Length: 141
Image (cartoon, rainbow, N blue to C red; front, side, top):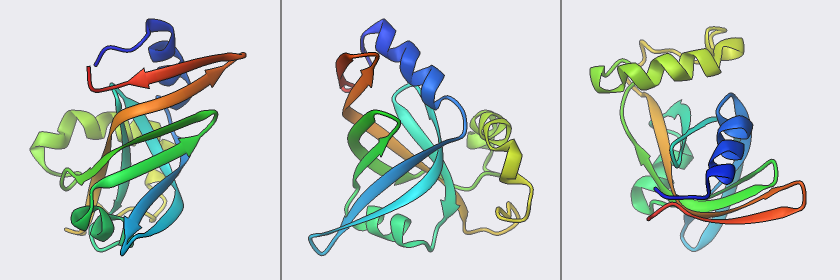
């Protein structure tokens, strides 16, 4: 990933914590959108969700995803990267638990449920606005 250093700083500051974004998926040619809690790091947004949810089902069939939030829009691909308890996700989960600490342990998320999962939205491109400046972001380089 090679994006403008100032844009990278803004993305980390704005979204490197619990951030609400709109996530759009497609099914049968129709868009679906919902608001999700997310955490951004290095060109990807992460969401704790449920493997049987519509979003995961839709992304399994068609990984195209679009997001919007706080003067940023982006498109990329969504993938279920597995259970929060998977050892491969241990370092990421430390960050996600810290970012989502305000609500993570309130019963909404059950790490004992095998269908609890992490959704990764790997960005391909985006547009970020900050203080009158537009940043066109290419996350594929």
